[in-house]
Length: 250
Image (tube, rainbow, N blue to C red; front, side, top):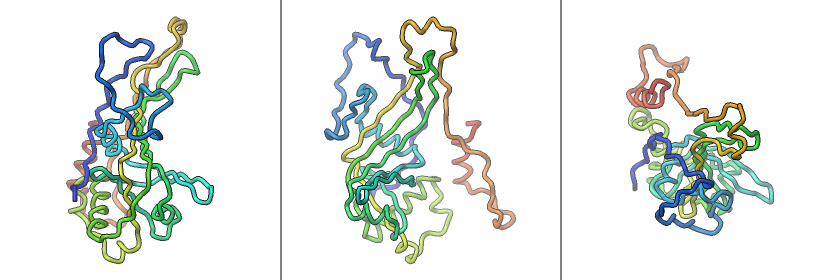
């Protein structure tokens, strides 16, 4: 099985070209959407169907949302996820409505969004945000083989804190039976990104309102010990390394 994916670099993508200021130079053809239903129709210039882009956003995002419907009632549920190769794992209680519906083959979508900045324009209507997002459509597959299930739990653990799996107790057989792990293939995935400054109407550039971008990012604070932690136990090497990478001073 492919080894668990590690968090991608937090480097921001390069600024997109304002479609109203498109240069005359020739650009390489853009990859096509994997299916008609994944094709980005609103602002298609912001779409990116490259697997590398999709995977990087999935790997950096800490929370995914699952969308599905049961008996005509739509639900959107937040969850943790872990990409391994060309599929995304997620899990839940074997008794949960979400897990039971998706394991039965319900059509679903999985989304991840990274918020990179507030975009303040001179016009109220042109305020926006810089973001990177992914939408994956399809049907999930229930993981039945114990070895794959164990590997998925390892992937979840390593997805949060690389190196953590070797620092803690692994799941017991009873614990594994209490959860259901599902895998969603990345066959129908698309990314959409916005980067760069506000796009004001030409006549508004003369206004005396401040305009620009306020960058946003997720940073780690100092680890807070569990109140029942035995005396003398310091944060583990994996924990310290993760905090150092994602801390406010990094």
